[in-house]
Length: 385
Image (cartoon, rainbow, N blue to C red; front, side):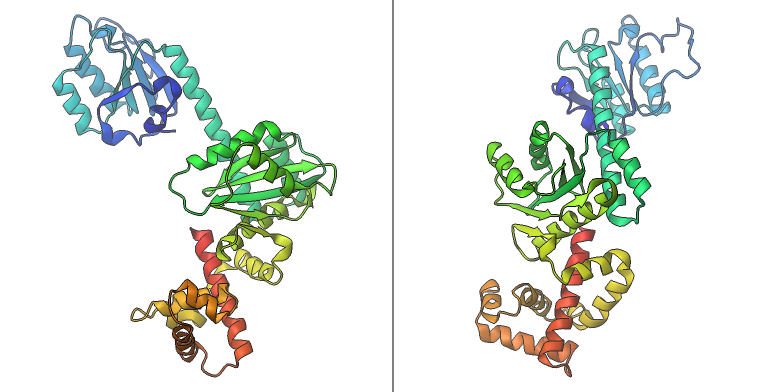
């Protein structure tokens, strides 16, 4: 959580930034109240006045008779590495210009309350938000480990216990991403489905969202159920890419379900298809495992084979044509339509591509190797993205 997130809470939505706008990225780990700590008439009773990375709330009552105390307070808060000062405009509606200048100089945000917000409620909402964000980060970390690492049955059981949710015998997973991501607000819509999910979780991962559903039956029609939920909540699938896993045992094969859904969604993007089922990927599964287990070897193959195209700055259309040629499964007419040109132009480009990377290979070997290299190239690009 940072100061910008703090300002997006329902209770702080009417706050305004009066100084230090360039410091809104500062982390927030706590919220504390400033009463009389910086008044020279009060002897400090705490060893540490305020903890670093805290938003400090105050009515500035300590400086009611002495405006000079304000400068001392702001200087001390900056020195103590507080994240921001938020004041209620009951004693001071506006702060002196020299204080605002000091805050701007040190990128120290000073915030003004929007109304009569209660300190205690601000603290409670901030801590509740931080707790939610911690759990979200925790789930994303688990998803990453299940996708990237080799995990044991014991680790999977530990993950499931830590999630603290109800899980049944079999798991079904979907991974969803918007094709044209403008912002991440679309993700929040999917959390509306959580009340319908009796046994499973919904969580985010790398600008995508995972929906895990478990059941006592292997015959659960997961895709049909998900489609019905999306219809109920008026969530359009037109701009979505969705990957579906096979059914797996929750306690022993959760990692397989997560991986399958994740990479199926990536393959759906590559194939420019709205959905992709892992069971339909055929030999592409081998490319996925190769890239996942030895990315360096996979990319060496890509760079060695496609190097002349990737390095060709004179005619970048050649690489784009090779990619479309593979996606369209070698259909010259469809490639031509995608590139808004005549089929003969595509034939000329493909001849040139072949001369550059594989002049001695026959048609079958050329297409097989080109398809492998291009898919690995696209897979790597999507994972890195």
